Length: 194
Image: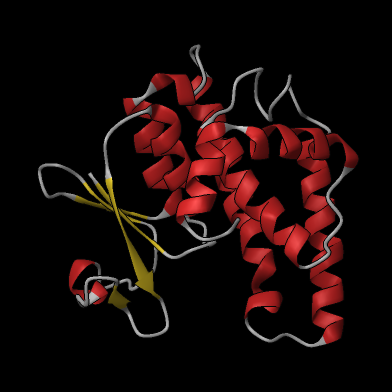
């Protein structure tokens, strides 16, 4: 497998998950402004979407979209998912919420929003994170073991920390536990984030 990522982007979640799974994989960075990969390739020749993550499987098949990539990883490495009849559904529910309600709300911070837009986004993000904080089940978001949803949440909490967005108290312990995990440390170092 080969993961195309941009340092600090949402693709970090898949990067962490693959390390956590302990599976061999390759990585290549992408400059999202030029759409050029670290090896000088045209990223839009890999995916016309032009954004990360992009996961090329061993058979050459391409997966894109963070939820799909993370669902694939959890399906292949069940320790990163949830058990039970509703496990996969609950995991996708959490991934979709993080994607649509938290991730997308950072847009004013990345796209040069006004101070008023950033302030409104900050309050909205904290409120949406509070919804998750109120439902923490164990040491991590959905259980006592981290899932791919935790790794996606980690990315958004790193962004919150960067932009001084308040992270609810009940998520701060989850955030600290995630940052201390060896797989997270490896991915953060690889992406030049620590």
